[in-house]
Length: 266
Length: 277
Image 1 (spheres, each protein chain N blue to C red):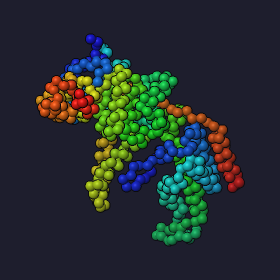
Image 2 (image 1 turned 90 degrees about the vertical axis):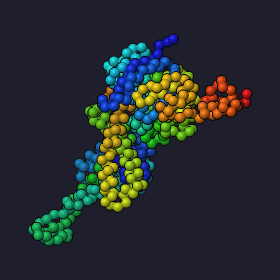
Image 3 (image 1 turned 120 degrees about the vertical axis):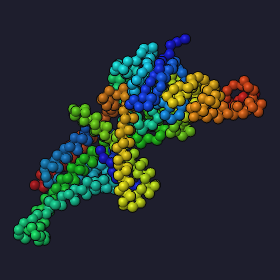
Image 4 (image 1 turned 180 degrees about the vertical axis):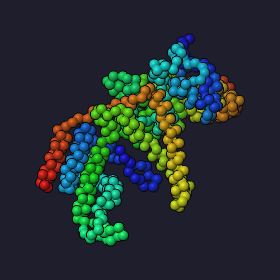
């Protein structure tokens, strides 16, 4: 579940739209979830830069090649967690000691701060693992509508309270984003973002109002649900999607490819 | 004279005990009626509807459904909400599922019907509202008119006897309003009781056979549309104006083109027919 950034005034374009338009959304959701989880697990457990690279490539192939998600959009979406990751993990490459060592560094009052080859290797490995994991998760969320993911979780006996919370949060994020966009457009049309100080103030007004409006909407939603005999459990009709041999072949070949790469790289 | 399907006696309701919104509402509604409920914003129309299906619990007064008094027990409320469906004004405030099919299935699934029955009802409701092509689409990305159709299909799938529409034409373009009137005609032919709250007086005048006017929490008129729209005192009290066709008929009678007792004209087509005679 996720909602990508947006240009000024545009309607929010969420990951879920891609999932609906994906050419592989007719695959059985359990198959896709199993594949994604196995890839995630192998990526972290095997701890190998080549394995990570293979997984990133595999997910790229499945999402862009099979699912027909536009490549440019995929890279932009992947870029967001990547940016956080890079900035957050740079610190790991940096070490401090009392002697000069490593590739390059500078002296500081507390000691010699340097970057070593081992540090760089560790960080690159980390980036690879994280990118592989994120790719696997994107593969799932860009090809499977969230309602199907929730229903697989329900089937796995995840407590219904959690499923219902997920359902409601998912729906309400749309409501809140819509409300926020309406208020933002209205404020912008009245020069609410004309300079930094005003913009911050406007943002404050909108955010506090968002809570009130959302609570009110929540109450109206509840009335409508009660009018249709809602008694606490979210029950919807679900589509049955077949597991085909094609999908099984895809899973097995992906796993074999990953394991082969790992063995070769050792 | 058969018994009314819904009876309301001296209903009173105030949100949180502050101001009284409903000040003693009494009415009888018979099966198959086409009722327009009109009145200012804040007159109590939506509150009245939510009281009728038990979502809001009246502080005083009684509601009878099929002659039986409603207690607020779980079984009574389920009977009430299955039999009386409300299509709310803002489609975005009702749609909760992520596919149209899932959305329409919410009501029947809550009634704990067997899966085959649910599938049959959903397909029937989608066909009725011309939504079969949309069944796997995400409801929040549909247009206003399409969303409206989804919310109506939601209620139809529960097979209610009474359907209440809260300002259904508010956000619809003229083509969609015509389509809606077509659906209302279909529902009426099947014997469903329809109650529509609206600000569109021309629509109320041409569609309704009975008009209930709300003013400040009370019913200030309950009768034929032809009668209420000639009574200026009531119209003023309820902040209403006359439908265009009433004004036109009055002018034509004044100018001697039409007789005093000529039939009430509900639409331009009827006017054309009468003038041709």
